[in-house]
Length: 132
Image (cartoon, rainbow, N blue to C red; front, side):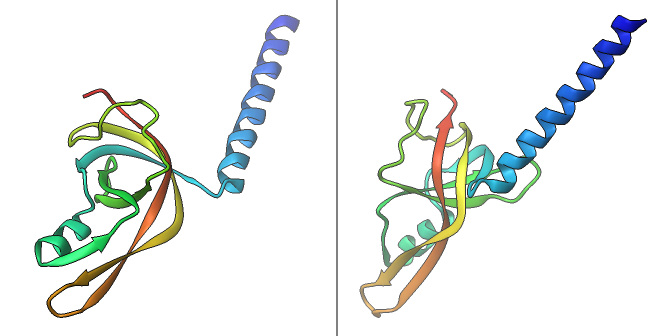
């Protein structure tokens, strides 16, 4: 009887400690997790602007990710952030990473009319993709 009580007590303590530790990480961390499937290897907003004659200055790359049960979201990936898995980023891959909720403004300018549009995108700080 004492062994069962001790086992249940240690299990409860372990669950409480692990829950508080993981919760504290997400509350205190400036980054948020992201996961899903790569829908398009370029942000659709940027792609749409570039097909209508805008030139967008991107210091890195952009990506469109579809999380599970959510709408697709675009992210900015700085040139210094590399894919941790080492695979090329292609449509259909699974992706898992961290992003900063503060946005990076990407400036797009139309050469003919001189119109300027700013596209704010959250910045991906760490990510990895599946092989296929």
